[in-house]
Amino acid sequence: MNQLIKELRNETFNEMVHYYAKNESERIIINQVIENSPVRVTPYLKKLMSKYESIRKQFLPSPLEAQTNGTATPFEEGKKTSHVYGLERLYKDRVLLTPHFDCPAYCRFCYKKSRVMRNRKSMTFDEIDLAVEEIGKMPEVRGALITGGDPFMDTTKLFYLLDQLSALKNISEIRIGTRMLLNSPEKFTSDICNHLASYIKPNFHNPAKSKYLAINVHFNHPDELQPEVLQACYKLTSNGITLRNQTVLLKGINDDANTIKRLFHLLLRNNIIIYYMNHCMPVEGSDHLRISVQKGLDIYKQLCTESSCSIPHYVYAPSGGKVHVGPDSSFDYAEINGVKMIKTKLLYKADDFRSIAKKNLPPMHSETKDGMIEGYYIDGED
Ligand code: SF4
Image (cartoon, rainbow, N blue to C red):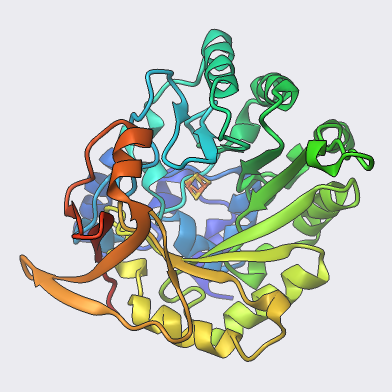
């Protein structure tokens, strides 16, 4: 076994943080990087990292993070779009709630690792009350996505929010986004899973009044599907909770069709729906983990020959919203200040964005002649 890997099992946190530093100057670079984007892993992840490079690369900083074209907030989510703290609305039919802004581990490719995002305080119980009251006044909103940070970091608050949301007449679809199943699978006790299942309320006589709860999980590599992790997933699915997986394409980790196919086949066999395959956002410090959107499309085309159960939505996300890529998609490129960009038209109307989000279009976005939003997306490099 590689000596470094052996050492990782017992080393102090400080040594682990510098795992990818080849020399003293790279240690210094990493120290600078983690000033703004600190490292955090759970004990369970630490155990997995001693065995799997695919997991180390997702959580340990690289000196390459210092060379970046990315930004700390590449997406509108997380930017203030409502007068109620923790509540955001970017779309007509759904809202986003962030009861807890912090995560138990920081993924190096995610914008929520940065101080900008982490230093936000959690919603108070009063703020949750206010947010729910506000959502009750939005008749077109039928869905709520509870996101983070990780909502499972504070289950008391999560259940308080779920109690109130599920009591609203207009809310029938509740989704929770989490990576806790990988970060700390032991958190999913039978009590927690049973409690979550209690929010699924089918109405067989009037199905329009049924309410459901689903969890959006996040697995990027087959190495993550350890027995403890799959057992925790099973506790949820066997209680009737739908799990849908969102994968981020990451250079040197899962950017080949075989790895992605293997991951998706394992997920399917374990009752987890293949949902999204996300192109890695242009997050500050993540350039070395980003492939081009075109390379993602090449992988996607190879998935399209599989059973339709293993074909995800492949998307990339400029600040203004997601763009779906199909097997026949092509891209319009532009170079701005030496950076390769994809120029793209979004599915959203500029007027809708302004009236729903109550703000102007994001930077590098404009309105087309037919009233849609057009924007630029920083491409990755292969
Ligand atoms: S929000 Fe999810 S992907 Fe982002 S750092 Fe937290 S756990 Fe990782």
